[in-house]
Length: 194
Image (cartoon, rainbow, N blue to C red; front, side, top):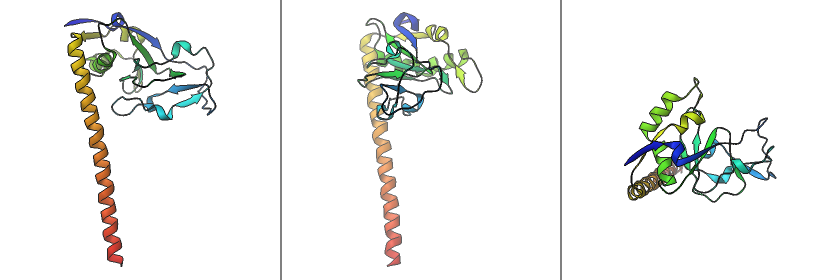
């Protein structure tokens, strides 16, 4: 297993910085990914992205399948792997867009590593600001990344995907059970009124 700086295995590009606040426009030519567009498992929910007209050339801020978005500004500094095929979609300025260089590291593994407690503790210690903290590009580039063999990375990615799927199914089951209990209780009340 090797260890190296993040900047040696991935490029880091700042997200889209607007001159003024983004104005949503349903006829917009592009979509913007914001923090609210990720679920609690750091998975992108692409169905409700904000449509808008970019003020500047959008190409360098474009997000593609296989990219990793790192939340640089905010309360939590998480990484989300982009699984969806996206068109005309930009990352907001609170993110860095990471693209893996070469084949030494799998993007899903890198996203997982960035969310691990060791990496998170280092990032919190290096972040600036109070309340809403900020991780600079320079700081992120110096994060140490542990790189096991690709075969181990693939096993980690598979295990994480299975655990995420299990958590999703358990949450759906809990929601369904809650609805059934409410319906049974309301039904019992209605039976008593008859």
